[in-house]
Amino acid sequence: MKPFTKEELRELMELGEEPSVSFFLPTDPVGRDPQQNRIKLKNLLRQAEDQLKQTTLRPAEIEKLMSPVETLYNESMFWSHQQEGLAIFINRSLFRYYRLPISFEEVVEVGKKFHLKPLLPLLSQDYHYYLLTLSQNQVQLYHCTPDHIHPLDMEGVPESLDETVRYDEPEKQFQFTTGTSQGGSGEMRAGAFHGQGIGMENTKKDLLQFFHKVDAGIQQKMTGTSAPLVLAGVDYLFPIYREANTYPQLIEKGLAGSPEELTVKELHKQSMGVLAPLMKESQKKAIAQYAELDGTGRTSKELESILLAAFHGRIETLFVATGYQQWGNYHQEEQKVDLQESASSENEDLVNAASLQTYLNGGAVYIVPAEEMPGDTGMAAIFRY
Image (cartoon, rainbow, N blue to C red):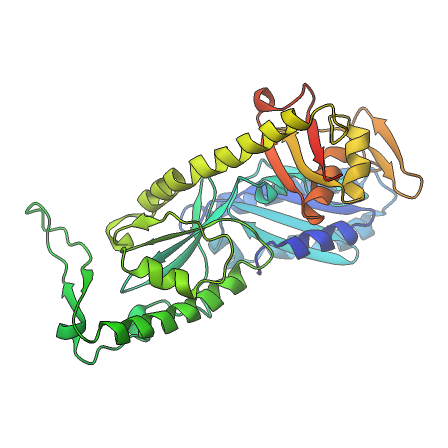
């Protein structure tokens, strides 16, 4: 299944029709306990059916609507290939599912539109990033969040330098120090490149050509995102890859050293060490900008004005307190907002709607702990004008 993108989000918003059913559940990755994943979906499926019984659908119509989810539940191979979370969306005209690198609480919602709020962390300006490891034996792209790291399918991307780079005279172009045991433990570590000799420039050209192919391949896997990209590899490879790179969010600092010497957990920890300060700094600057503009007419903490501005593409930056919700309806033609106290099949989470519209219109969305929110409400926005 293709990754979740901005275009997918737009389609889910546009193709929502009553009743639209949204499933979210945490899943264990491959090799842990796929049966538990199936049980979670089965429980949510029964909850969905109970909610659908409160609508005008007849039992036969409910059974027909839920049949694709039942089929998914019964596919053993499907449950052997999971990430951290599973999202499923279904109505009379659409059925889609996404294996995602974030975990969810177990939730099922039946409404007039799809419930997309749990996806907001994926859209947050400071939540996820990519890590690209470069070594002699393998090139691998990971999708990361502060809590998880997940390797992406590398189909269409050359994975090994040896697939492309050939050395006419290895002893003149590179010295390659093969793996050696450390501290007498017998544990082998990956070798390292040391460039020298008259053939070095030719080898750099080969590497540059190879990295152009890698760049083209990973661009296809990061379509529709503006998440940062971190490189991990020996120092020598960094400037060559940067010359080939066309992804605008490649950050300056990388992880120097052979990634083959690190576990995936260590790669995640070290890459977060690089990204965390940048992520926090971006949020701090945005909050400082809100404080500077407060009182000028370019900020608001009123949900109704924020919602209207979101649909008109006026929001530059939106702050949403973690867990904040407000139910109601937005009547776009009348430019009117009706607030309601609780969720029902006839309303939606307006915080969700404002956040998604902001993102689709090119604004930044920050999911912020309540104590760090600018202002004293669950939402705050900086307007473009």
